Length: 309
Image: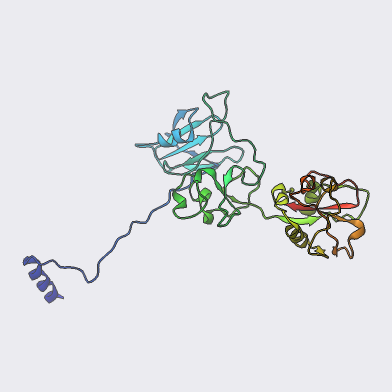
């Protein structure tokens, strides 16, 4: 070892560049910004109350210098800064409390109390379809709902987009959506079922059928996706019913398909109860389109096929 060091010293003294056996490469990996918390208030002596009517960006971006963390409340835009990370936390499950370090990512509307703050930000109207306030990626994991602020749902460097990993990355989205307004969640799968009541004394619409059979709501988007006989027959099969033909019976045409609750089964043509004639209209044919979720059949002989989510 001593001999090697002496030889090395000679080369260095002679001005010869000495290279290690193999190049050493250092890579700086991109670290995604952390996600802001949404239900944790921070408690710390010396916290600084900045006031009300801040937007999230105003409160977060003004946390500079000695500021290490912040809390922000969407309703009235309350903003508090903390000069240390040694705070304790408490859950605020009855209201939203946004918080984190200044580099955390989240996109939330606020302040929303227009009686307190002017200008104010009004939240988007309630979504009528799942992920109605967010975005999906039709070509990759289309059941994952990302925040609209992400721009693209999933893909390379998703954690660095506004919203962070929990709102923009497929790998960070695992919880099932519980409301149509929610983002950063998995869109519930569709369950197909048909009205099981073999009685002429009731007329159940799909909202009722879905609630009674699955505990879910009728999904009009999935109903509207029944664009031809093959898609309707496939939906019947998913519900556990076998159509006895590769095409539907269109005897509700020309004018009765919607009022009869198409697509539907008919009590007098159900065979064994698990196979028989499947009825429906031509979805693109005017009044013969698929009935909406709230349509009750004209009488109890007709039993609706329903998409539940």
